[in-house]
Amino acid sequence: MPSFEDRTDFENADKGYLGTTSQSTITDASGRTVWNFDAYTFLDGACPDTANPSLWRQSQLTAKHGLYQVAAGVYQVRGFDLSNISFIEGDTGVIVVDPLLSGECAEAALALYREHRGDRAVTAVIYSHSHADHFGGVRGVVPDGAVIPIIAPAGFLENAVAENVYAGAAMNRRAVFMYGAELPKGPDGHIGAGLGQTTSTGTISLIEPNLPITGTGQEEVVDGVRIVFQLTPGTEAPSEMNFAFPDRRALCMAENATHNLHNVLTLRGALVRDPHLWARYLTEAIELFAAGADVLFASHHWPTWGTAELTGFLSEQRDLYAYLHDQTLRMLNQGYTGVEIAEMIQMPPALERAWHTHGYYGSVSHNVKAIYQRYMGWFDGNPAHLWELPPAESAARHVEIMGGADAILPKARAAVDAGEMRWATQLLNYVVFADPGSTEAREMLAGVYDKLGHGSENGTWRNFYLQGAAELRGNKPSISLDSASPDVVRALGIDQVFDSIAIRIDAPRAWDTRLTIDWNFTDLKEEVRLSLANGVLTQTRSHDGTSADLVLTLTKPQLLGLVATGDLGGIRSDGDSGALTTLMGLLDDVDHNFDIVTP
Image (cartoon, rainbow, N blue to C red):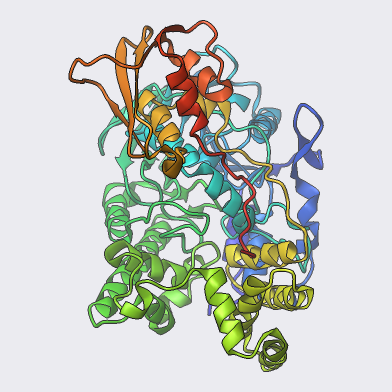
C-alpha cells in the first residue's frame, strides 16, 4: 500500500490553480440542477468508518474544481463534470479538448476560462475518443452555425453513436448503479466514482467531426498550434487517440493513462477492451512522446509534471495492463477460470505502492474476469454451468432445499456477524429472488450491501452496492440521463438506424410475417431494401429485382421523424402502406427502468 503521507498527488492537483466559479450549482434552461459543486464539501473532513480511506483520498482529489494552468498556453477546467475539459490557446482563439458530457457544464467551464484568460473564440474542438463524456457538451462551447475544425480519431462517429443507441437503454440503467448520480451525497452515501465524482445530468449533444485523424504520426497545425497524433483504437475506447503539443512540450493521454486502474470491461456494459493492445500503445506513446514532454495531462484527473516522472507514470500504467493480461492468460492456460484467477492473482509490490495503479474505477477482480471473457467467453468449461436454471427459479429451488427463508435468514445473520459478507450476500440474494416481497430479506441484504459499499476501495463497486441497497429499500430512481440524444440519433448512419429497428423486433410475434419495404433516400442518393422473414429484419443495398410490398421515397431527416413518431408526413408512399404499419407494430418497447436487484 502506498503511503498516505505522500502528498505529491495533492500538490499536482493544486498546481497551477487560477480560481473557480462563485456558483454553487450549474443548472439547465429550466433551472434544474445538473451539477452541484457544494455536494462534496464533506470530503474536506477526515475519512469516516463508512468509507475506504484510499477511495476517500481519491475522491478528495477528484472533487477539486476550478481552472488550472498546465503549461504555457495549456489550461484545464477540472471538477465540472466526470471528465476534464482542456483549452489550448492558439494564434486567434482557443482549441477545446473534450467538451465534457453536458452542454451546460461545458458552457460554465468555458465561461470560467474566459473570466481568467479573456473572451477568446473557440477555433477548433478535439474529441479524444468516442465516449459521451468527451463530446456531449460540445454545443455548450461551439455557437450555432459556427464552422470550425472538429477533430476526432478514425471511426469516432460510428462508435460514438452505436454505443449510445444499440445497447443505450441497458447501459444507461446500469450507469445509475455505476456512477451513483442518484445516491445521496455524503460520508455514508455517494463519495465519488474514482475516475471523477459522477456524471452530470444536462444536455448531451454531438457535432459531427470534419477533420479525421487516420494514422499515427499525422500532424496538423490548428490555429497556429502544432499537434502530433497517435491512434490507439481498441484501448479504453474503440476509437481513441493520444496527442502531443511538441512546441508546448505537453502530452495529452486522453483516457489511456489516468490516476487509477481503468476498466477492461466497464460495469455499465461495453465491448471487452484489449489490455494487451492497450499496453503496446502505452509503450509506443513513451517512444513517440515522453522525451519531448515536460507535462502529461489527460481527460480525467490531474497532470504529471517532469519528463522522468511522466515516463515512469506511463511505464507503470503500461505494466499494469500488461501484467493483468499476461498473468490471466498464464493461469487460464493452467485450467483456472476467470472467477478463480480473480481470487488468486497477486499484483507486484512496486505497482501496489503506486497510488495511480489502484482500482478506484476498474478493479483487478472484474478486469481479470473480463480478460477471461475476451479469450474464453462466458462459459468456464464445466458442464454443470452450461445450462443452469435462470436466477429466479434457481433461487426458489435453493431456498426450498435449504429449508425455506425462515431457516436461511438466521444463517445469513450469523454470516454478517462473522464478517462473511460475500456469503451473506449469496444467501440473502437467494431469498430475495425467491420471494421479492420479503421485507426482512430485502432490508438485511440492503444492510449487507451498505457494509460492502462502505468498505470498497473501488468507487464504482461502492456505487453499485449502495444503489442496490437503495433500490431494495424502494428508492428506485427514474433515469435522468439519455445518451441517445437528438444529436446522437441524427448522427446515426442509415444502416445504424435500421439496425436500431431490427434489434427491437419482437421475433416470436414476427416469425410468420413476410414483408419487403424499399427506402429511396433522395438526399443521400441511396436505396435500401428491408426484408422481414423468420423474425429477422435484413437490409440490403441490392436485390433480385422483385417488387417490394411498399416503396417509400424520403430523406434521412424524414426517416428519423418516422422512427420517432410513426408519422409519414411528406413521405411519398407507393404500394401497401399496411406493410409499414405491420413492421412498426412488431417493435418492442424499450424498458429504461428495468429491475436489477430483484427479479
